[in-house]
Structures are given as structure tokens and as C-alpha cells.
Image (tube, rainbow, N blue to C red):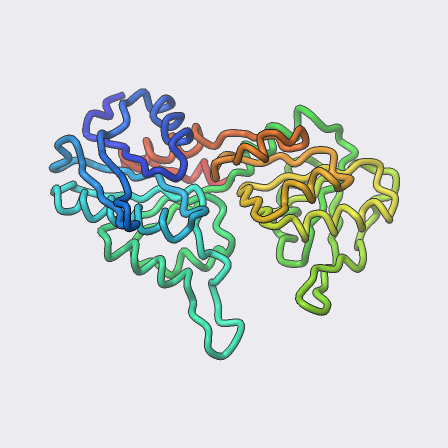
Length: 314
């Protein structure tokens, strides 16, 4: 399979994942200098000819979010000015995705702003993974391939858990995701009735569904501070769940999330490497990391060859 017209570059947000994708594609990573001046400015220099090439840029806009986003935009601008034929940003994690609608009168829709920035910087199409809200695809006037990490997570769950599982959505918004997992695992479904009290503190109020004496797995798209996850686990424990595990695509794990997980009754948290795992998280025996490199690599290869990526949307 000839991929000689394909070039893959990576920013500094997730170099390990970029290297794994290159290994899957059996290509060398594009040469580029991406550094920061002492005052915080980002400087990029593409170190090889990209004229007329199909270029992909892997960059998760995770913490530090603004720096990594700006790094992506500057890399894309450099490639555009170097006459790349097509530029496809690959965002394993799309920062600002939670700001996808106006929840108050005078607030921005930051997810749309990021979409505009990526397009203006020279993006011809976008490959991303488990967007927090599917409607973000409509913020772009370019093709968007929103892949799902479900195949990677499901393969692990099938090999490590029995068929008496109950898949749990930690809130009403995640029911569709949990139902899809439950269907593929031939498992039952439960929902946490999550409400927010004073100061927006998460309070898991009620478990809708039968979890007593059954192994449970909480399914979510991301774990940020861990508040929703640990409160959901607490509710499941109080309702007699035999065991509590969890899985998600994006391990944001900000603040004291790792400590919260370690101190909770969650036995395992299965995540992907869409966001680089911190040293603290790597030291937590409860956190298991799966790679999405092959999934993203296959999407990149098919996009380059103009083949269908439909079979990846499962």
C-alpha cells in the first residue's frame, strides 16, 4: 500500500500517540521544530518539503488547552504557507467541546469559535474522537469524521468481564452511549439521576435500574475532576452493586481527580490515550490505559486513500 504522498506531523501535546500512529502506518513522522520562545510565543519550522502532499497533524487540545490549540493553528498555518495540498487536523481530544451552546444570556459558544479557527488556519477536513456533543460537527463547513473509541473499549470489556453486566450512564445525557455499549455486550442498562445542588456540586440522587448484586460499569465520554464518576459509584454502592468499574475515552483528570478515584470504591477505570496520561495517573493502579493509535491510524489511511471510513463508526 503506497502512502508516499502522506505526511504526518504532531504537536507537543501527545507525542507518544503520534509515534504509535506512525508505527501503525509504517511511515516516518514529519520533521518539524515546534518550540516556545521565552515570552510564550510559539515558533514552528517545517523541516521537509510538503508541497502537494496530503498532510495530517495530530494534536490533542488538552491541558494546557490554549497553548496546545495555538500550537495546532500555527503548525497548520506553516503547512498552508508551505503549499501542502490538503491539511487534516487530527484531534483525539477536542478542547472547548463542552461549551457547545448558550446556557446563559451572555456567554460564548467556544466550540464554534474553535471550529472557525481550525478552518481559517487551513483545515480541509477534521478527524476527531468522541466529541462531547455530536452537533459540533455542524459547526464546521468542512468534512468531519467523528470516530468512536467504543470498539477499543468494548474489546477490553468483553475479555475482562462476564455477561451479567449492568452498563451505567452517570447522567441522562449519556444514556445513548451507555445503551450502545449495553447492546453490544448483551448487558442490562441503568441510569444515575444526577442533580446539582448548592455551588453546582454533583449529587447522585437515585439509581434507575436494577444493580443489586450485579457487576456494574459506568460509561462516560470523559472524566474531568472525577466528581460525577465518584458520586455515581457511591450511588451504585448504596444500591448494592456487586462491583463497580468505569470506562471513558478522554482521561482529562484535572485537579484532584486521581486522588478521588483512588479513594473511591471504583475498582478499575479504563481510559484511552487520546490525552497523555500524567505521571500521577500512571502511578494509580486503578487506571488502565488502552491505545487508540490503530483506530486513528486506520482513519488517516482511509482518508488519504479516499476510502470509506464507515466501518470505523461502530
